[in-house]
Each structure stands twice: as C-alpha cells, then as structure tokens.
Image (tube, rainbow, N blue to C red; front, side):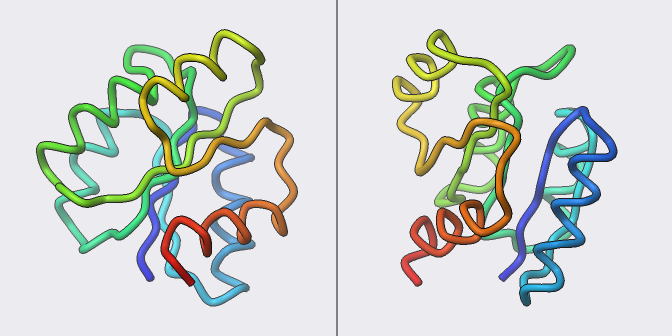
Length: 117
C-alpha cells in the first residue's frame, strides 16, 4: 500500500514515514502542498495523510487539488490545533482526523480503517 504523507514539520513527517515503513507500508513524504502535487503523479498512492495547516496551501486546499489528479484517493488529516480545524475537516468529509502528537498505533489503526483492512 502506497501512502503519501504531507506535513511542513520535516522531523515529524520523516519519522512517521519511517515508522509506517517498519509496519509494512510503502510511505513517502513531502513537506509542502506543491511537492505533493508533483509526487502524487509518480506512484499509485492509495492514501494521503495531510497536515491541515501548512504554509501557502492548507491540507484542505491540497485535498481539493489532489481529488482532480487522483479520484478515489483516501485521506487522513493531522492537526496540532483544535475545534476550528475539527469543524473544517468534518466539513471536508475526511476519512479520518487525528490530533498531533499522534501515536503511531492510532495512525496505523486509522490507515487500516480508511483502507478497509
């Protein structure tokens, strides 16, 4: 299963990708929405894990753009923030939403649920 992680926090996103790889997922990462737009065309990703708040392009805006490039892609949103993001992500009909810091076990559980495993 190919997963793309997008978060502007370099240490977090690289660590999450590494931990997911240890659990059998093929996880790539980028640190911006622009990079994600390019990367999504390189492989047949089944899931994108997006930070809600990023500079220049939010995770919500990125999802809108990715939906045109990869219809059917599943999404999990991550956020270090609270209620306003909760509302916005809910309105975007996310497959899942987790608040940082996220436990890898919780993320794996949400990935499996989003992918129907």
